[in-house]
Image (cartoon, rainbow, N blue to C red):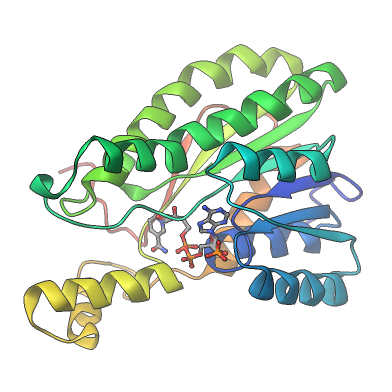
Length: 259
Ligand code: NAP
């Protein structure tokens, strides 16, 4: 299927690995020129080189922390004018409700609410002027089904979801769509770390925790970053112009909203 976005330019933040990389690869496969970002430059350069070699699109890489203002300014300067924005950042650590103080909440809000909002505020006005734009925010299943050990993530993502609900309807008349993509459990480094941390808390092994988690997913497997990326690319397509302000869950059926 031709997504109709070949030659467009996209910024995908936090994209050297995992779900961000999945989105970047799927956009590259659709012919989109890319600006990639992550804090560590080694994996970032490797990913940029690999994507450029496989898909023949231009790929620029900016090593910076997208959750702080200076890092974001660096990324925005290189990105310039983009047609497509995919926002992503690392997720906050798990814990108990008693673990977190004000500073922990500020950090989580900076990463998973205020950074995507700042990126949208920087990029969406240009998209509106040009009459076309696509924004996809990578959020979490926790928006629909809060995860008990991820209180920081639950809190920050709820704030972003509320912001997008209003903003997406305000910008839609200018040809710009904003949607959120909600990953359930996907096989990325983040999930390997969460399995390890659950094992430490429960006194088990990461393999046992993985087995337990698999038992909660009707599809019987962890999600694949490439499939996640393909959904993101579709949301960025011409054909997705009527999808506005949605929270799209990719979780293998784990969240049973009818119960
Ligand atoms: P991942 O495999 O750990 O990859 C994270 C990527 O983001 C890496 O490229 C990392 O590179 C980059 N990154 C992290 N913090 C950054 C920052 N401050 N600035 C710039 N780049 C940054 O994570 P993932 O599983 O793809 O998860 C992506 C997002 O989806 C997270 O917010 C996570 O909480 C959420 N999520 C994931 C799952 C899942 O099952 N995987 C489920 C629900 C929600 P550097 O470390 O070099 O910066």
